[in-house]
Image 1 (cartoon, rainbow, N blue to C red):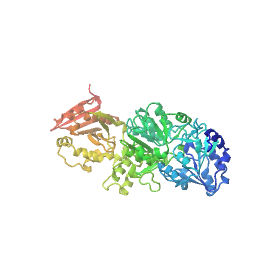
Image 2 (cartoon, rainbow, N blue to C red):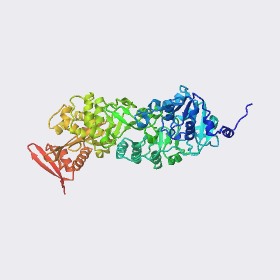
Image 3 (spheres, rainbow, N blue to C red):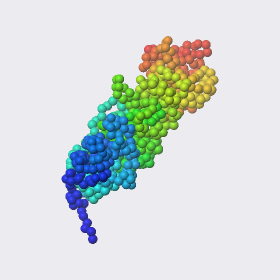
Length: 627
């Protein structure tokens, strides 16, 4: 009968000095290194120090910022000592990545564990970092479960750095002493990230995204300054949940404030589910033995079918650049250890499949400054690897606005992307779009393309139990504005245009479609999903330069009349016109049009009524208040 051994005795027997442990690696073996902030730094430093004794070993890891220059060693030895295989799905354009691009293996994060477990890519040695064993011999992979668990489970030999500073994170994060071959005890700080600087562009993007995130949503968010600002903007939300590749410091703060409760996820309720964490010592302390945290491997967390099971699943990821058709280039950056990009497609597809789900791409409109300022929205990604295909892209947000590209034609996409680009680059993008055949020849460039969308005019109202969004029009609203007019009753068309009208082609509506938000402004009342909403009411003003007064006009769908929409639109137009330096408003209407007359009377200004033939001229000046 075989003698039973106690794990604690085995633990002692498995302990080795670090040099002896690393020397167990044989020529030609494939060596996995634990990921991101869970990297076993002590083991990796010794691996580099002993590199001269190795022959043709292959290092396998998620792409990471190298604290120990293994890539440099591979270069110097012409890969005869070691070669590098870095799993990474980004475009590889960032300076720190481009020089080692040949080492990149593009794979979706959700698929990497299968590579290991199937032995299609056999792991001979896994270098991992774990917490000390508990009373039952279980050690936690802590801040890096992701693909590390699969590597450890499938490796021929596991060498574990036991670090008391590694938090014991709950979930499917444990490996038993019995399943580890060599133990190296060494205490050191885990890898940490520095706080990211705030930028106004990132803060604006965060505020715009917050409008797309409903209470009770489950969120995933990439890494970066824009992500930090977005999480800050979500601080007024309620009952958010988390299912994300990474947990971050900002998620911890939202949890501490009661914004993240995980009560309404629809799946894995009560738990923040992730596969890794990146942040500071405070975050790592928060994770330790926290029953609200559930770490799982990447083939679970990044599985699109698992992601899709969450209610109102919102994925928010950062792009490096986008073209006019919606293709996305993305790269991680050094301050996040080049992590956080390889799972982007998993979450984009999973969130799009979820009930009430949304996938959001966020990017600042420009990079650089001064003479080095360049647009991140470009005509085409000709020399850059595409990370997200255009067919998977739905919502896109820059500091200049938000658009939904899903279901849109290439012409609609081009107009949408131009509208959220930096104003200094819109002329060039518009002309390039025409040259590429993305816009019809009859499209002309007007001053409206330089307008900056005034997000502050947006307002959400509940009217008879239905959510109505009051907002300025956008270039992408062209078709829905036309549909609004086609759906009007005949007498409402006559009230608006003073004659019967059955055709509302683009040329006829040009003045209200091409607005610059200053001298001409169109406000809409919209119901339905963002990007697919129906215009139910519309108000617009157009400046008369000779008087500095703006003419206003309104239309409201018959079934929404009498609900106060005209009054809301009138107030919005008056506020915007006054702020934009206009003197006042005027309108021509029929004497029997009591609706328009009463609209003017709702304003806090003195209203003048002048009869001209069979019409009434209504006007008000902003410097003449009604007593």
